[in-house]
Amino acid sequence: MKQIDRLRNLGLFDSRVPRYTSYPTAPIFGTDVGGTFQEAALANLPVDVPVSVYIHIPFCERLCWFCACRTQGTRTLNPVENYIGVLEQELSLIAKHIPDGLRMGRLHWGGGTPTILSPELIHRLAKAVKAVFQPTEDCEFSVEIDPTLVDRAKIAALAAEGMNRASIGIQDFDTQVQTAIGREQPFSVTKRCVDDLRAAGIHSLNADLVYGLPHQDKPRITDTVNKVLSLAPDRVALFGYAHVPWMAKRQQLIDDTALPSDENRFGLAETAAGLLHGAGFESIGIDHFAKPEDGLCKAKHSGHLRRNFQGYTDDHCPTLVGIGASSISRFASGYVQNAPATAAYIARITEGQLPGARGYAMQPEDKLRARTIEMLMCDFTLDLPALTKQFGDDAEALAPHIEEVCEVYGSLVTWSGDKLTITPAGRPLTRMIASTFDTHKPEGVRYSQAS
Ligand SMILES: C[S@@+](CC[C@H](N)C(=O)[O-])C[C@H]1O[C@@H](n2cnc3c(N)ncnc32)[C@H](O)[C@@H]1O
Ligand code: SF4
Image 1: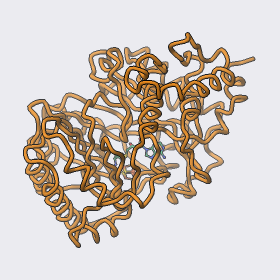
Image 2 (image 1 turned 180 degrees about the horizontal axis):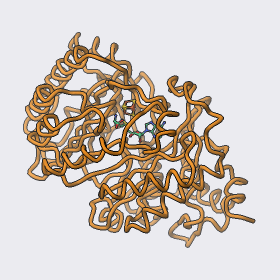
Image 3 (image 1 turned 120 degrees about the vertical axis):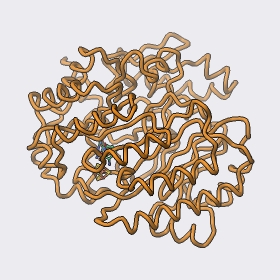
C-alpha cells in the first residue's frame, strides 16, 4: 500500500487533533482558575530562576483572510496607544505580586502585529517591561514582524531595546495565492525588510511559511521556498494551513474550492521540506526547520527542545508570564489565560484587577502527560526511563496508551520496552499519536486537520 494511503486509512486527513502547544490545551481551561490563582502563582515564583515574558499586541493594519490569530484591524494608532497604556498598568500590577529582582531570560512580542507600534510606543513598552523584569545578560528578545508594516525607524527602535531575533511573516510569495488569502506582500518589500534588519545588527531570522493555501501547487511553493532561501534565514516555520472558518470568521472569505486536495497538500509539505533539507536545514519537530548552527538544532541534538505557545523553542525558563489580552501564562501550578477579548481585558486592568480569566490547575498526572506529549512532539520518542526518573511510578499510567499506539500504528512506531519511537514514515501522524495520551480531549471542539 502506498504510504499516503496507509496514512489516510489511519485518519491523517479526517482527524481533528490539537497542535499541542500546551497540555492540557486551551479549550479545556475553566473559569475556576483566574486572578486569585494568578496572584498566588506570581507570588510563589522563585527569584533566582529567570522567567520568559510574552507580550501580545492584538492589532493589525491589514486583516489577512487566512489568519487564525486573535487580532483586530485598526487604521489609526489611537487604540494601540491606549492599549500600551493598559499594558503599562498590567505590568505595574504584576510588579506588586512578583518577588523583587525577578529576571527575564526571554522576551517575545507577538500578535497580531507588534510592528504596528511607532518607535515611541516601542520604547514606552520596552521601558515598562524592563522596569518590572530585569533582562539577563544573555536575554533573547524576539519580535514578530510584518514586512509591510515596518520601517528603518521601527527596526532601529527595536534593536536599541535589545531585539536580537526577528520572525518575519511571509506565508507564500505567489501573487495568485496572496490574492486568494487577502495578503499582498511583494518579494522586494520582504527583501528590504530583511536587509534593514541585518543592517541594524539583527542576524537571527525566522521566516513563517504556510502550506495548503488556495491555488498553491508544486511550482509555486518551490518558487516561494527558493525565494525564502535567497533571504538566508536561520529558521523556517512551515505551518499547515488551519482552515477553521467556524472559529476564524475571516476565513469565510477564502474560496475553499481552491484549496489543494489532501494528497496535494501532503505533497506541498514534502516539496517544501525537501528543498529546505537540500539547502542544509534540519527538521525540528513537526513543522520547523533550522540551520545546524541555530539554537533550535542544538537543542534538538542535546535533548533540550521544548514546545510552547509560539511553537518549538530552546527556551529553558520553566515559567512564561503572558501579558496582554488573551495571553497565556504557564506556571508550575498551571495555566492562566488573560481575558481573551481586548475590551474585557482592558476593563479588568482599568478596575485594578489581575487579568487572569480562565485557566487550569495542573495535577501531578497532567504534568506527566504534558511532558510525554511534549517528548513526542519534539523528539518523536517517548523515553519511559526518563519519565519514570522524573515522575516515579506514576509513569506506569502510560502503559495502556503505549500498548494502544503500538496496536493502532503498527510498524509506523517501534517499542523497545523502554522507548516508543515514531518512525520517519509515521511522523505525519505525530499529533494523532500524541493525542492518545491526552485524557482531557474536550467534547465538541473542532480542531484543524491533523496533517
Ligand atoms: C501573528 S502571525 C504573523 C505576524 C505578522 N502579523 C505578519 O503577518 O507577518 C504568526 C503566524 O501564524 C501563522 N498563521 C496564522 N494563521 C494561520 C493559519 N490559519 N494556519 C496556519 N498558520 C497560520 C502565519 O504563518 C503567521 O505568520
Ligand atoms: S497574518 Fe499577521 S497581519 Fe495578517 S491578520 Fe494575521 S496577524 Fe495580522
